[in-house]
Image 1 (tube, rainbow, N blue to C red):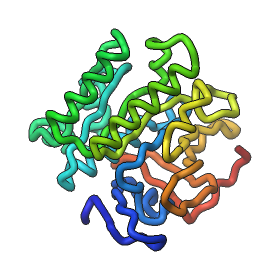
Image 2 (image 1 turned 30 degrees about the vertical axis):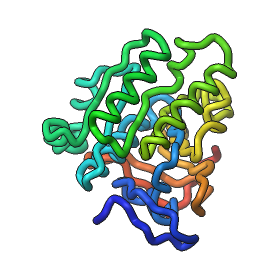
Image 3 (image 1 turned 120 degrees about the vertical axis):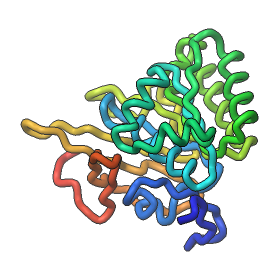
Length: 240
């Protein structure tokens, strides 16, 4: 299966298949190639697994990927995701996938590391975890928004599919920490971990996605031993 699908019911928009069962169906064919998507959710909702699944799928299809982390260590991410896909270590050894730790020093260094790593690896899929840490570089919201737009522009100029990880706090009715992240991205996919009685229900909603039709309802989601699965044809029997 090719990682890019040029056939689109709405025209000739190129698609990147995600490797997440059910997601491409919900997106009517896949994520538009070269778009920047905010992957947001509460802690524990599966954001890291979601992005790593997209990156490893691309790497297997000849599209190198980089996961930039400002929070977790590279080793922790590799070990955690190896539980879902044992091939991740082989992909890293082959140079098809890279996990890069970025120190929280200053924004210019952050920007330089992203550009140089993409240039060196020829990455086509990039995840940044997380844009919430931009608050360490800037004191005001507008500077954070400007930085997110600038990083998004760098990824687009280099022809990358960009995944920007954001945060939703428990109990808050918003899509991001600062309230600006969703406006700087082409698409927004929100992951939810919803408490219902004595258990939790996982769900996904495609809030927006330019250049494609998509489902807008809450779709049931599960994290299995093989990774994330979306059920676009099922209904979520809970109140959000």
